Image (cartoon, rainbow, N blue to C red; front, side, top):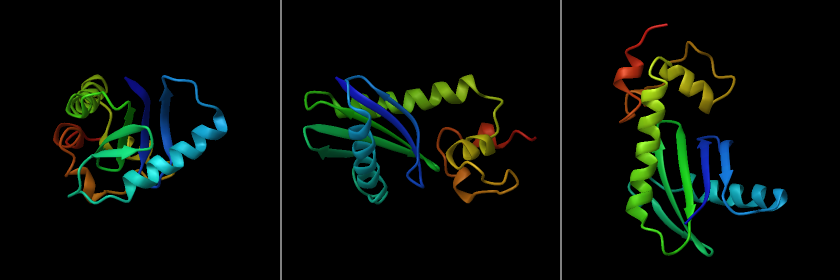
Length: 135
């Protein structure tokens, strides 16, 4: 069962959070801080599944955006990993006319729109079709 869903940028700022179990606000802040720190500190060669307290964290990175899902111990990690990818594909399809730089500004508020980040070309889903769009 999914306990929470987070979208976080590389600076560790939570951009979207959805909890499927009640968690007090002050505990949410602490939980998000610890979860984000544990995901951001891992290298790209390490596994995207983390055992954390009484649940598992499954995360994927898309350029400057991390999507983290917290689940209970009985959940299938690969199913959640694929769910994250499908979620991003749906966002990409639904917002197909949104520039990648808009995603970048979503991930990095205040970032200049003229900045070209080298990580945009490396994005497996949001890369080529969206980056090819011109302003």
